[in-house]
Length: 339
Image 1: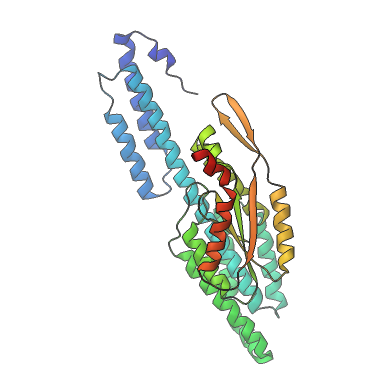
Image 2 (image 1 turned 90 degrees about the horizontal axis):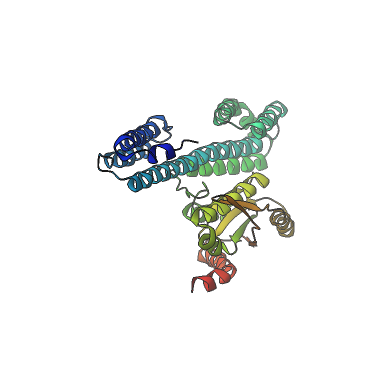
């Protein structure tokens, strides 16, 4: 840990100049060594740091120095949060493309033992991948698999009309999901998840598919109380912890930031609705506690989450109204606190 205490406690004439120089070097070093993940965000970081550096001068007082150091650290924190969200989004995008591509390939080549064997091999590699470079390599391998599909499509065409129907559905679904993933996706900075706009688009797409889909809404209770007591960073951390837990426990399902204290999961499986509810009940029961650090103190927050599941049967405002109504019913305690 870098400490300016010995500089600040030195004599004014001798120590202040050294302290100002040290703070200036600190600001310049932050801008020099920050990772450039996104050019626009990086330029904004550099601009903010230059403004802070320009505020330093011979007449800068010691309290002003401490304020500038604090603002420098806050600027770096916000930049890292934006960069982390975008990196998580890119990683999730590649995972989603591979998932969609794998599903389409499985449907289109269900009669090919050789291709299915290679597909299962790639799927096992996907589960073990933890670097974005691994996912890019796997996406390339899957693309090569598609190059060999033409002959297998002809085989399916000759075998049965039902095979062609499955092929058409698989290609249509893949193209739809790929187009959605390659479009500019709006990302929630607190959780790194796609925002409500993307969630509502996914609900409309799911309603048009033949395979049953379920929308599960999760609402963090007493979030406003956490924000008031521990700060908004703690509240954002609570939502991020829930998003990470749900994404890890149910990686094959689509997860979104809904609004306020809520996340939305869209599940597409040909299983009974009661079974989906049972799985969600088990997931919520296993949510871990969240540790909050406030200066030298550590507090453990038990995350209380309300949830509800709704079959996605048709597009329209009725389902969105039901989801919003449930979220509103879960935050009555927060509404009381805010009065």
